[in-house]
Amino acid sequence: MTELSQIPLAGVIGYPVAHSRSPALHGYWLKRYDLKGHYIPMAVEPQNLERVLRTLPDLGFFGANITLPHKEAILSIADVITDRAALIGAANTLIFRKDGKIHADNTDGSGFIANLRQNAPYWDPAAGPAAVLGAGGAARAVVAALIEVGVPEVRLVNRTRPRAESMRQDFGAKVVVYDWTHVGEMIEDCATLVNTTSLGMTGKADLPLNLDRLNQACLVTDIVYTPLKTQLLIEAEDRGNTVVDGLGMLLHQAVPGFERWFGLRPVVDDATRQAVLAA
Image (cartoon, rainbow, N blue to C red; front, top):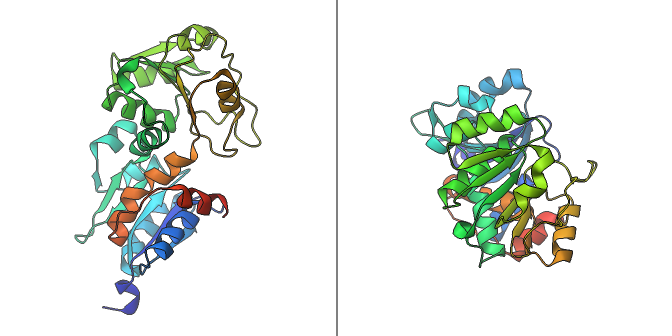
């Protein structure tokens, strides 16, 4: 066995990938816990994805994170796919098994829930309906996770209704689709409000949502984390709602992969947040 293969390697694969904060996060954990290993960003074009993935284990890689635009395509390459990754239709965490097979999982949903439980410990998923804005890949992970932890109803709205209707067919009767023109009615008695769209992100338009009918007891969260406080969270907090930013979802979704690749389960705390924000 070569020296290279004795040191665990992992990384994040996307195209582009320079913006990813995952290298800073995993690099911080490796240093914090004094572990041998390296985590690197890898820009891989779509046509080269399978060839690269089949080569990485021979170079000493134990696994990888997958980000855009590969999160859906990876399911046609992986040899073993978890049930939740199959349901969501995307994967973000790969393990290269000793038998040569690529194992694909999706930890976005569990990261989303862990972020809420850490930063809003009194949040009760069963307290009432959840309103989810958007119907993309992130929304699928969030909806699957909300249903799994006991939310009684998920109200879904998307600019293009057919995409939301498709999600309702995949996730079942707990998902109720609304037209965007009825979004005010949709959020009125919700216990949880989640923005999964890119609206509100730095460089994007703000989310056009009037919160006048929002229950003050409703937890409001945004999976966007640049900026940390989106206009949605600022307005909700000003009204007295509990808000949770999206950075914790990024941090918590990384925990299972790090544990499998480097052999230690890392802790997500304020020092972790600050290390990633400073990167």
